[in-house]
Structures are given as structure tokens and as C-alpha cells.
Length: 112
Length: 114
Image 1: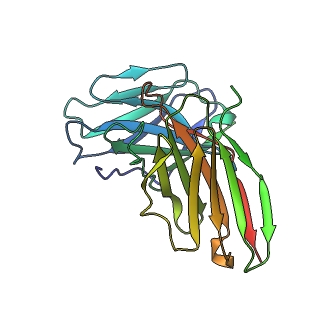
Image 2: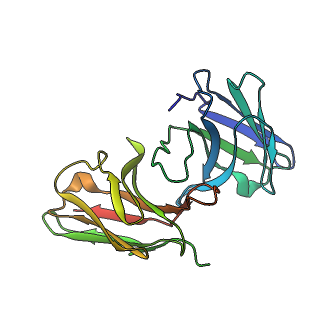
């Protein structure tokens, strides 16, 4: 799996967009970018994933650069409940191959 | 769907005792994963199963750890004998081959070995 690099921590004001960056410069052509988050004391929660195209769902948007070496997770209107550790993972199909390896992630603090 | 169900939520045991953690995956999911989380080491993949068959147990720390999946709706992670360094939160997750919506994690079991 490609190594990913994320900032250790970020702050965001409530109601503003939270933009969480991730670098994955060694990503290979068949590796997806997955995002999960872990709210304190809970299990990780799947947010979104993508291969090449930008993706959007009810939780967030994922912007992947054209060269696929980096991506940004966007929470359009952050709330206090979005305070969590966010993990960016680059892996080939992570549905069944057991290669979802979590790094240290970014601790996002949403402040009132 | 009730999601991935783990039991117990909390377990406190004495060193040397056997501990069994239980997991019920989401119905219809083909893969099941056991993770361990500590402050020092973060989230570690211990073992995973596809269609009830163990595929990779290279993350299991020692022979004291064992995992089984006797059927598609139940898995156990056993530690025998337990040691204080096994204290951690243990998560179970499941996923589907057919629909890639990532892994669904349970709420975890917080294990304390004293």
C-alpha cells in the first residue's frame, strides 16, 4: 500500500468548510483513496473513497488531484460532531483484501 | 440493520485468565476483520477472514491469540493466557465483496488486564 502523509492536527470553525489534505505520492494505478474517521471512543466510520474522479456523498466530498498524488477531504459545513481523527488510506480494493492499514490520521477539532 | 455487534463492551480480567471477545458481522458481509487499538500503536489489523476462512493472521501478536469464525454470523477472538500488555480496545469490522462501501466497524470491546 502507498504511504500517506497527513497533518497531525487541524482546527475548523463550526459552520465553515473543513479541508483535510492527504499526500500519497507513491500511489499506484489500482489503489483507491479511502477516508475514515474515528470519533472518540467509537469504532472507525467509513466516509468516502475514490480512484481518479472526485466523489461526493451525503457526508463529504473527495477531491483527487489529476496526478493522484494528493487528495482533499471536504466537510462542507463542519459541526461540533465532526470533531474526530480522520484517516486517509491508499489501498487496492479494500472491501475484502484485509489491507486497510490505518496510520495516525489528522485530529480535527471543530470549534464553536 | 443493527450493524456489527461486539460483546462484551467492557472486560476486566486478571492476568493469566482466558478472555473471549465476540463479534456478529453484518448479515451478508463476506469479510470479517479484527483490529486492536492502543495509544502507543494505534489501530493494528490482527487477522481477517473471507467467507469464514482465515486469510492473513500475520498481525496476531503471539500464540496466545487465536481467532475463529465457525459460521458467517459469528467470530471469536481468544486470548489465553491474558497479560496486562493485552489491554486495549478490540474492534471487529465486516465488509462485502459485492458492494464497496468500506468496512463497518463495531463499537469495540475495551479490555483491561490487571
